[in-house]
Image (cartoon, rainbow, N blue to C red; front, side, top):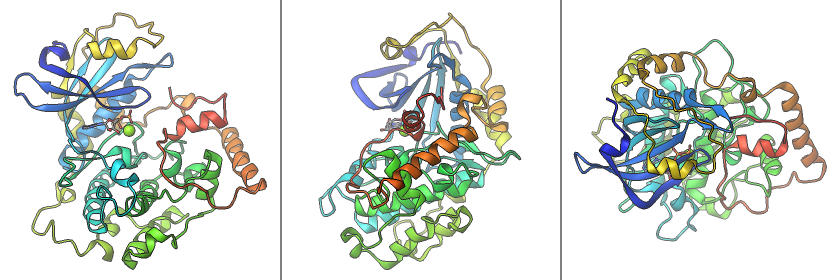
Length: 404
Ligand code: ADP
Ligand code: MG
């Protein structure tokens, strides 16, 4: 197959579903079937570096997670000269972010019963990922979507751009994530594991239940400090009416030592999540057979469509990029790429790995914040839209480039 994306899909004008630093997501319609999809356009060159292998890694993880209905389904992949398009199942309900930020008591805000049902689904997806040695590393309301918003649908986990494999013998210590959701071990440059995601689930539960971001400070340093000091309150007004089991659930996750945190599997058995009738009788997504990584990787070859063409959306998107792109035509088999990606760790370059001197600078930033008396709880804990941590760190360490 060597046909351009636009031969097969119409992009719905003006309808941008989301936008990150290097990606834009648009709603589109498959011409043949009339079905709606979300197309994630991703530039292959970012800040002058070739990031194709990172996109391929994201594709490979999505392909691996095909067996879980809690992870967004990848329909097809197109490759153009300077970008790739991931054609994803369309999650019509959008991000759970909007219900999270709504004031409690407002109609849009989740009820505790709803949070329980959705949290269970999130955990089913995360349990599947962890069972397959994938850590997401960017679990937050913007990356948890709903199939519909009213009545509230089911969960779809998206955005595997920061995800990593944890089965290699190498220890994984990279700085990444989104400040409010980042676990203490990341700040301390200690090994990353599946427990790192479980911390973020604890933060997510807190936010979904209260609309309050438990560690958010006035600036990133203050947020990091709140996290490293485990400065979290379980006596906020928003928590008082909750089931006590809900507090115990969060406390089982917001623990400094990763090995003390509950696993996704344990969370699914937690008393707080036991009284849900909704899914009675339905097989859970996590019960689906977990494929071997290689099988998943090899299956993905069917998805890729290469094309030297560039979509109009991409042209628009790439206008401001120093695009010294050669007219490359890429026709590789995804099978090969996926195998490569899944067996190694992505982003091996020196620019993406945090050195111990960088760690010291971060530690110094945290220590400095402590010394200036910022150790008290953040004043405003209402949500704000945060970029992943990689951006935040660049602010602290202007010379450091963590991700291309
Ligand atoms: P980034 O890596 O730039 O954060 P994401 O994959 O998180 O990219 O997508 C950015 C945003 O686009 C999401 O937060 C969401 O609002 C929207 N989005 C992504 N995938 C879908 C989808 N399948 N259906 C609907 N909206 C989506
Ligand atoms: Mg995202």
